[in-house]
Amino acid sequence: MVAHGDESMSGMDMGMDMGSGSSHSGMSMAMSFFTATDTQLYSEAWTPKSAGAYAGTCIFLILLAITLRALFTAKAFLDAKAMEAALKRRYVVVADQQSAGDKAFNDASSMTGILTTNGMQENVRIVSAPVKHIQPFRFSVDLPRAAIMTVAAGVGYLLMLAVMTYNVGYFLSVLAGAFIGELGLGRFNQGAMAM
Image 1 (cartoon, rainbow, N blue to C red):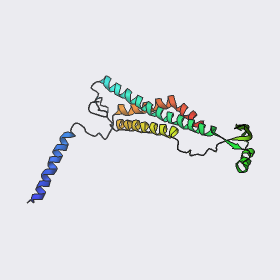
Image 2 (image 1 turned 120 degrees about the vertical axis):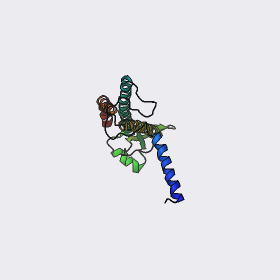
Image 3 (image 1 turned 60 degrees about the vertical axis):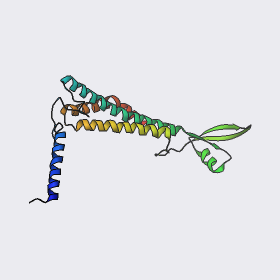
Image 4 (image 1 turned 90 degrees about the horizontal axis):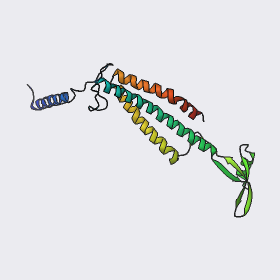
């Protein structure tokens, strides 16, 4: 004998199962790789209907993977450019200031110059800024870096979703794009890191 509360819960569960079963009937989760050419990508509207549409989807995934590699290379260039700017920053130390002057005159990387202000001339030393591993926050550097990494994260997640379809063609397209991107852009990334 079923109590009234149990009966309503049982009916509610069955109704939910029937409703959810009908909404998920078109989308089954494959747990092994397969080679169908009509696998949807990102939405039901993007379901290749022919071999040509499937090839176009694979080419899109190749280009998306190349774009991800290009974004990482662009970030490396921005980082190298910011570090180069930090290394080129110079400060002027007036010779009359003993504490900083002693350090500046003993610094081998500093240059001697004359500073003229309001008709007065002073001997000065121009020294390089001390460069630390972690640079201070600058909008001109950190804002573009954050924007690039946000776009790269979005592209990376789109590629991950394509691989999670378990479609062999999509998976191989992502790998091909990663290979081509590294082949074409990897050397620029190495050069940017060495600057």
